[in-house]
Length: 122
Image (cartoon, rainbow, N blue to C red):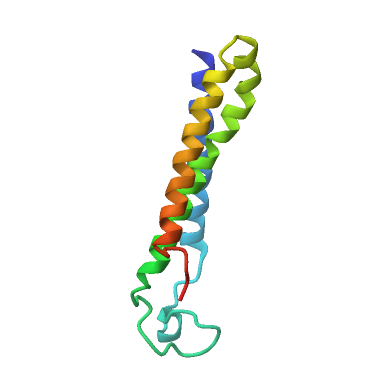
């Protein structure tokens, strides 16, 4: 039970420090509001358009594809670490074929999005 108590104390300490710093900033910080402070910062230049203009759909598509492939590649690290142990236990070929199928699916997906020109930025 002791490791859980230590973890709980760590979270409580982190929450107290965070809350204390936010409260101190709110109580001690300046409270003068002006029109200039309310404007979005544009490197000293007055903004010409609304700050919440819609982005191109390509941006979202490339971002989502990056996240998907990045997360899938993360699965290679535990496989590589445990592969030697599985080879010594006689399951190396099974694990190798399983990862080959996984990487094959990744390559097919990458070829599909490449042919659909989803990675081209216009």
